[in-house]
View 1 (tube, one colour):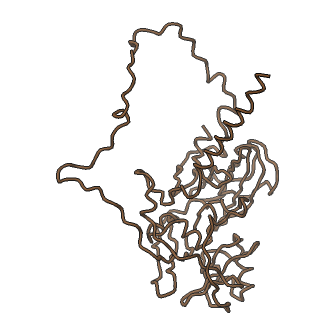
View 2: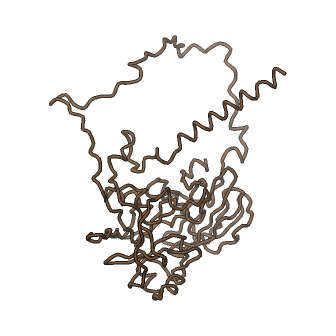
View 3: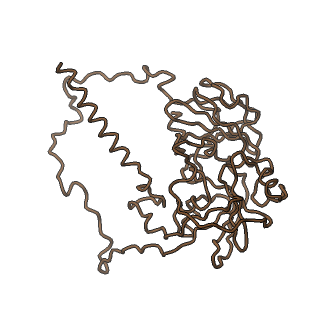
Amino acid sequence: MRTLGRFPRIGLVLGASVLALSACVQTNALDWDLRAGGGNTSDAARQATAAVPTPDANGILSYPDYQLAKARRGDTVAGMAARLGLNPEQLAQTNALRPTDPLREGELLLLPNRVAAAPQPAVIAGTGLPGSTGGRVDIGAIATTALDEVGPSATSTASAPIANQPATHRVARGETAFTIARTYNVSAKALADWNQLGADMAVREGQTLIIPVATAPAPPLEPVVTPPGAGSPTPEPPSAAKPLPDEEPVAAAQKPKETPPSPDLGGQATGASAAKFVMPVQGKIIRGYDRKSNQGIDIAAPAGTAVKAADAGTVSVISADTNGKGIVIIRHAGDLLTVYVGISGATVAKGAKVSRGQEIGKVAAGDPAFLHFEVRNTSKESFDPVTYLQ
C-alpha cells in the first residue's frame, strides 16, 4: 500500500512539468525579430500596424493601384485564372509561377488586370499564426525550394505608398519574411497575417507582398548613458553574487581510487542508436544548415543517384517546386518530418509506407546536381539535419 501511494504524487509532478513547459512555448513569448544576443528586442523593432484586410466575397483585395486574389482549397494558378476570367499565363508570369502550379489555400496572388470586385468590407484583426486550422498542420506548406542557381542577386522592388493603399514588395533572391519585415520596421507576424503566409513563413523569389500599414512608430530604445571614457557597463558575473564552492583538486599524476573501468560505448552502439537517420544520398555537403537562409543541407550527388528514405515512415507529400524539381516529405515517429527536394522520378506515392533506406527516387539533373534535405517537426520548426545523421 505504501508503494502504490507514491503514484499520485508522481502524477502531480508530471502535471506541473507539463504546465510549466506549455507556459514556456507560448507564441507571445517568441522573439519574432530573431535578433541574436541581448535578449528579446522584438518590441523595439515593431511598429503597431492596422488590422488585417479582409478580401471581399469573391476573395479579392482591391486597392487603387492593384488587386490581389485569395486562393481557394485545391486551386491552381490556371484554376484561379479561369474563375476570375484572366489569362493563366499572365497570372502565372505576374507571380513568378507556372499555370499548373498548385496554390496553398489562402495564398494571395497579384492580378495582372483588374477584375470586378465587391466593395471592401470592414477589416478584422488577425487571431494567430496563418496556416493553422484548429491545430491541424498543413504538411504540404513546409516543403522549401532547392538552392537557387548561381547568378547575380535580384534587386528588390517596392511600390511608392499612397493614401489608403499598402506598399508592395517584390521578393528578391535570398530574402525571407523576417528580413523583409525588418526592412519595413514591422513585425514578421504582421507581415505573415497580411499576406496569409504559411506557418513556415516561406516566401519565394518574385512573390509580391503587401506591407502592413503602420499606425504608430516603433517604441524607442532606452540608451544606457555612461560618462566619457568610462566605456560600456559590464554585466556582473554570476560568481560575484555567490562564490564558487571550495574544491580540492586531485593532482594529474594521482589516479583517483576505485575508478571503475570506462565502458566501450562505441562497441555497444548499433546502427539504430549510432544515427537517428541514414544519409539520403552519399556525397559532400556543399551548403550547410542556416535557420534563416537554408533550413536544411545540400548534398552533392551525380544525377540519377538513388535517394533513400532517412528512416521508416509514411509519405505525406509528393510535389514539385517552382523549378520543377520533385519534393517528397515523409512523416516519421516522434512527430518528425524529412523533406527531400531535387528528386526526379519519385518511386513512392502519397500515403505509402516506406522503410529505412528504401529508395524513393533519383537525384535530379542540375549544375551542380544535389539533394536538398531537411528535418522538421510537425510544428514546422527546422533542425540541423547533421545532428540527426551523426
